[in-house]
Amino acid sequence: MNKYLVLENYIGGKFVPCSKLMDSFNPSTGEVYCKVPDSGPEEVDAAVRAAKEAFPDWSAKSPAERSKVLNKLADLIEARLEEFVQAESKDQGKTITFARNVDIPRSAYNFRFFASSVLHHTNDCSQMDHMGCLNYTVRCPVGVAGLISPWNLPLYLLTWKIAPAVAAGNTVVAKPSEMTSVTAWMMCQLLEEAGFPPGVINVVFGTGPRAGDALVSHPDVPLISFTGSTATARLITERSAPYCKKLSLELGGKNPAIIFADADMEECISTTVRSSFSNQGEICLCSSRIFVERSIYPEFLARFVEAARRWKTGVPSDPSNDNGALISKEHLQKVKGYVALALEEGAQVHCGEGVDKLILPQQNAGGYFMLPTIISGVKDSSALMQEEIFGPVTCVTPFDEEEEVISRANGVRYGLSATVWSRDVGRVHRVARKLQAGLVWTNCWLVRDLNLPFGGMKNSGIGREGGKDSYHFFTEVKSITIKH
Image 1 (cartoon, one colour):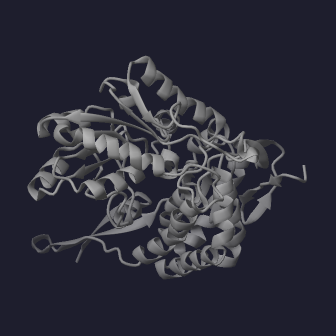
Image 2: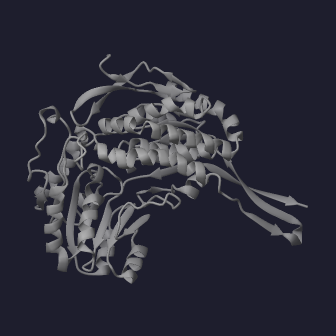
Image 3: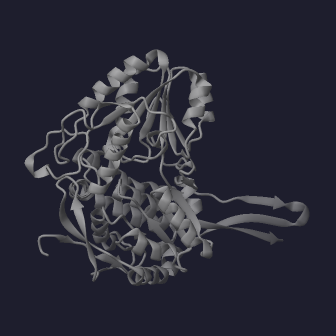
């Protein structure tokens, strides 16, 4: 057992060993390297009790007091940045460069951002002088928040939930993905030093069907924030329904990139390679359907394929690599299955899977690697254009008219994000308004102001996250009328 890293749950300010453990794999080698608690209702119940007990004192603290603790935790994460970077890369399969530039700095910044924003909210007030009344609102923390985060951006998306929840005065029970639990466990080691009282943040490791289910159906957890698949969100909705819980669901995407003939081709190609393949394509915001105006389609496709071939896939610890390994063997097989389906349907694979050879060092031969893959000749009705693949696979297709491409872009059950490439300001505004997406980027991708709402339409989710939106979700509003 000693050769493995063994994680423990963090409940009521203490690390608590779990009697049941499960294997966690290093995606770049395919080998077990870590043992993760397989928690169930008992562990979740203990964590909820601890959170419930800590709530009165934590919620009574001023926003400024809570803000200080959040900033201290951000300092502690930044002081250990490189340890977190190495751990996230090894645990998730992402490149060391992506973890160093994106995941861990953003995780620390999530605490800083909400430590600041919680100090600046104001409430509503209205006068009814003819009745001698004054009305105003107050916002109160809700209680114990159940937070469930995914495996693609492990600490980044966990802290995106923990920070606003505790900043607003709630206590939390968090369940990270069982496939990527290490950085959450490392964060728990810093909570006491940061000044979090025992029970304010509890982390229970385990699977969705056991630990997740116990959390979402717990009668003492009035709100659930979940990021993950639409299928899991349906189960969460069903399990939480009897308790009328508040739900925030950030789900999948099948995001279109629309490229008009007047786009800046250079900028567009380099950004679209990034938006299609970053983090192995394992980001809910990745572009997976690329619509190109017919007059530039042949040139775009040739240059896009060329650029994708330069996007290096290999060992995550090599800083020169752009992509690392996919999360698991099962996920790799699923993603490759879509490429096989494309061939069956008569589509053309231009690069990547089955076309180019991936050369890996011997010790990484069992890793879950896949090259960036570009496919054309796919019908809009195909599973490749309708379902979230969540890997380094994107489909390219030509279009003729603006109205046609808007209709095709909207022709999926998802509505998370979209990108539009054009130098025509009027068109950019017009198309952005008509696209059914919670976020539309024009001539860029993944530029984020955390104050603004983040979330999707249709099957991409319920609710929004961001400065004000997260504060509203993690508080209850109360209207008070005083007659004087």
